[in-house]
Length: 111
Image 1 (cartoon, rainbow, N blue to C red):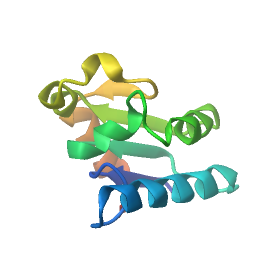
Image 2: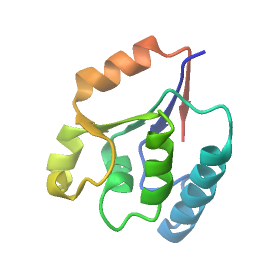
Image 3: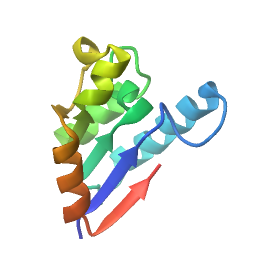
């Protein structure tokens, strides 16, 4: 089963930023230790900030990428936030890449 995770926030949930970040760290650290991992993790809107320098989850995202999880980041969103040169993990793509990943997924989990 092809499972895709979708990050659209700079963390998890609708909470103060510090809590969102803490939850993202916890979630991704646990996910990295699981045998079953998603095929892809997609990042758009404020979610792109998670793959940029000084993100608290970079190490866990690198770990997931090394384990074969494809990380796709929205180039339009990076440009909007002025972060194109700050990406430290994953593959910068466009909305066509994100659309394709979503259409091919058996299961999409929005975080």
